[in-house]
Image: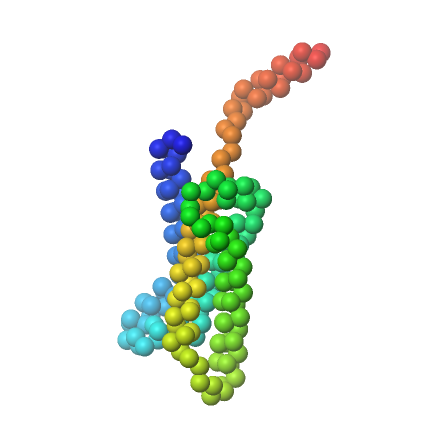
Length: 170
């Protein structure tokens, strides 16, 4: 593959990835400004404790699952130089289900006001691991999606050829 094609593919992948990450986490990033203004720094960690990072993970994983399940992208998986992309493909749905169930449980406990002793460190660590996996999976899926190369069509040449074919038939 030509070095300029590889560089262009890399730029497109990183651009798409950063749009995805910043698009998904924008509400949190904006809330950080408010937290810094009102000096309630303890609420930064509550973002993880309340399961909000799991929602962001689910958003990234849903998009990743859609992209990786596309027929054209399934063909691209085979030619990808990314190591472990096949495993990422299969784990995406597993992590999507885990993050969704974990969020549902945390949300349910939160609105029930029940005094249930949850292992907060387990929630924090697993939430961060799921988010990191979802970010990697998102990057991988965007990389795979941009591996699709469609042939360049010369419209003028094709139109001229079509007109010539009609003229030949007359």
